[in-house]
Amino acid sequence: MQKENDTLLVAKLREGNKFAFEALYEKYSARLYNTIVLLVYDKSLAKDITQSSFMTIWEKRSNLDTEKSFPAYLCTIARNMAVSYTHLRAHETKA
Image 1 (cartoon, rainbow, N blue to C red):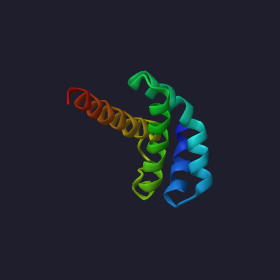
Image 2 (cartoon, rainbow, N blue to C red):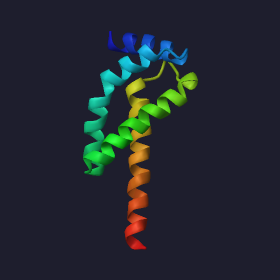
Image 3 (cartoon, rainbow, N blue to C red):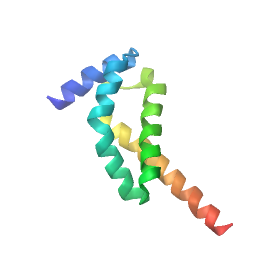
């Protein structure tokens, strides 16, 4: 049922439906935030990454694949942002 609901929401999101975007945000933002906090150990940064991840989803909405897992795609985006930030932070402390 969840996969079917996500598939419908992602299909609507691909068409630019803001209500579908908001529904996906409401459904996944808290879980994503909690996951990111565990990666970066910084609540403020985790909030920023969560927001940026959803902004990326909105910007790339026309490329979303309804057959693939939306939460997995979202987590991949957020994880990549977290890794990039951690990598940047490591280089700044060395400089």
